[in-house]
Image (cartoon, helix red, strand yellow):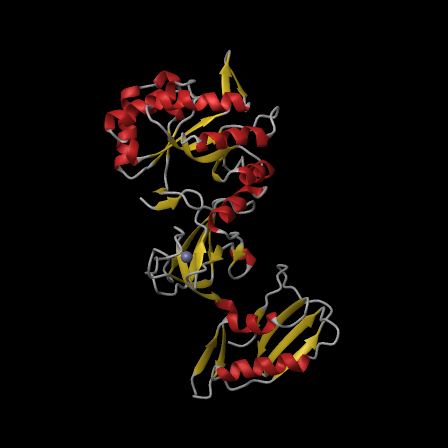
Length: 399
Ligand SMILES: [Zn+2]
């Protein structure tokens, strides 16, 4: 089982968790079978599932009893990260939020009794009560931690603003919300980004290569590479025949399945990026996400030049990006033509001297062993776009 880390400091846990709600509540309760459910819990833990999730409102109470019984029978309490929730009440068949501080303080003792334990590893506020300021509910959640009855806190179906308010009082270690193609407002409202940043200290949207690749990754502080945010995108580095390349080898292309894309939901499409999966699956920084340690960029962006040695030199887009980043221009495009390099610049800051750019391009290319081409810098009102509306940064009109 692949491992994840719970929150910024939290314990490692299996990437798949077991939600127990359906064992007693919701879906088809006519099919309830406690003996089978206990076997499911035991088998899940055997297979490496460590997060076991319940709530007092499931039943109510019966689900916690069932989970407590399963863990006791299997002697599994110490092997699982046990999560339960408070803040939702079931009354006369209706469910309503109840985030009153006094209610939260009492609720934990009932949960511990039913779960047959002296603490839970993760305690969720199941809903934010619109009648109670989040600061008050979360304040009593924090007291539960201070009393040693819960190790960490989570929140469910909260807005980004509520999460931020709670986190300022006591760390939010987990966010649990419905997520599907039909229910993704909260993703788009930035909650996923908030979670990634809180856990790893980085936003996930340092997109490598062009934005359209949607290769969502962020740089690693300890390793010269980037971690792919595998919760958001499935990235497969493959050879010409679509076979996965081994670690340490550059692939010919990348197959990308974006899990939340508006335009291409769950469709696997092919990008021409050449990237290299890292040789070690484990990074010393502790992030569990797969690492790519080499990005050559998109194949179209890689230029080839005749070399002084008589060979050809391959120049990666990173070199041009480095040079162009220093130019105070609104837009640029670099075109390789038979007679040399042409650089188009738009929106250039007043006072910038184009020869500075031409010189540094020639110097960088010379350092690569290239027979230095002529470089022409041209100012244009706007960078021309292709028929498809794209304005590639680097393009070759020679092959
Ligand atoms: Zn790392």
